[in-house]
Length: 454
Image 1 (cartoon, rainbow, N blue to C red):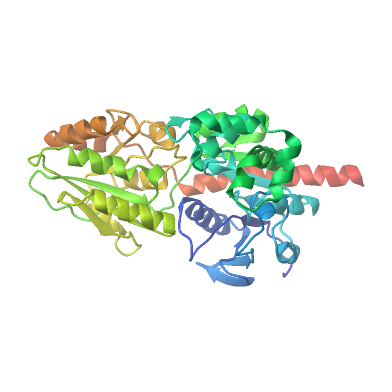
Image 2 (cartoon, rainbow, N blue to C red):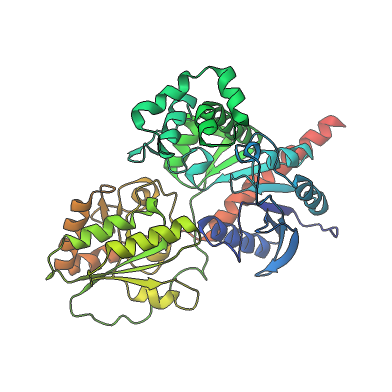
């Protein structure tokens, strides 16, 4: 790569555009554009969605993709060995030769092994934690699937919880912790559900160690929400190593609502996002179904299903909505229709039953002057003031959701009042400036280390 006087930041994450669209990808996209406008050089590095390495530009940013195995071994899936084709990743990193590597994901294709290699090259490592799966093997921080977890990584507790997720009765899941280590170790080689169950504690223990190793490798850990910062601290990371930097929107990401047409008192509630059970879309559908037909409300559900699991959940939601004319599945939100979509919404619903770190769509709604009706949980409750700029509801409580929807439909003046109290949305440039402060600090530390070594 050509020599440059600009500081070169390498963004490493588990997925990227155009084949994957999500909050982390959008965060990185905005950060790259803002850094570039401030005269930084930025490059994206992510696993490929096929067997080959490739290079392209996306919105003016260079993107490298490296291959990962489409049929990985159990040891690779469990994080016990480097991913196959790892040498391709190594060669690309050496070619790019960045000043700093900034990690944003924790996946099989973007793991502690990837961070360790970069650290071994003498390159500082920064990690931003966007979602719970950095810490939670279940991926949701919802213990047993119904209770918000403290977030502390304890092998025995996590083993039981993950085993229950995979179908083992809760009452039996703790028994796996009593299997002798030598049996659990031998069962790691058994490539079936039986072997996985018997070796689960070993698998979880290794995963926890990998997470802690990644925290140790990182010179700074960026948290995008206060609740996440607390969980990072619980897991033994020193406070001085953690930096809180909340999400922000760029000017082009902020929504400009078009002229809103009166719907004769009808309250339009929108859902915009992924089709995943933890997003709680089924909760709002059940809540609307419990309302009497005379309640003047409609729910517009926007999103796309990217995986088989998401497609299955979408079909389940459509089946759940059968004969409920007040619920419409309205398709995907695109750059072309985004303004119109937000213009049709009076209130944005975020019925998540897991801990959101943002979510981004909340900020987009606020930028458009749209209040929130959402779960009293995680990043939602950090951004929404109940009864001021939105309504907070107990996660998963269908009756409470139903009552809140009915109340707002009968008091649309409250929706307007909530809208008038929406705070200014933080800009993505503020996030970029936060990161630049950390980058400069790391480069100064590097200069000091070099001077000491000489």
